[in-house]
Length: 269
Ligand code: PEP
Image (cartoon, rainbow, N blue to C red):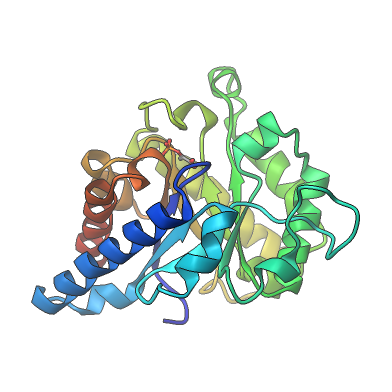
């Protein structure tokens, strides 16, 4: 698959040992293969990319068994080597991770990552040919004070600073309202769609300002924040929602599988 139309990504955060990761991915792949064999609609399978963003310690073992799923890392450092205790270099991830998550709100809030380092990480990820997934989103306070769009615009402006058209095209953006992450309170499909449309327009304007006229290849925009099997179909049915980034529900194989199935249903229409 070259360019997927949808991405279903599971962010495992600081969960699962290497063995638990291998067991999960093996079982998930068996379920996917069985479904592909028995389902009448095979066209949609090729348009949906399934991605597991595992802890660093699981990346190497799961890469060698993954055929149906892509593998992602939860972070990377912008330097290639040196005295950076505890960091992971892009060279260490090369050939193992397909995607790299950058700027997750937990990295921004708990580990104080700022937009300057996030911008450097995106550039490093692109230089080393990873697909970066950049996370942006507002706090509850920012939403309630009417600052959702300005927050997102400020983050995107700083995080994408200095990127070329071709580099921007390689990104995936995840809209993750911070008040919805791990809270059980997802954005409604309409709330999410409104922000996705805003992000889509921002990206098109940014690309056009660089004398780019082909709008057919713009970054996919995923929604993240308390996605479940129950709410995923309605979220994914929205025009500008091109996948989901799933935390808690990606730790349970049946829930994650059901979310993938809902995406196949949407992709079929
Ligand atoms: C996340 O970790 O990016 C996330 C969206 O988590 P959850 O699905 O648990 O809200």
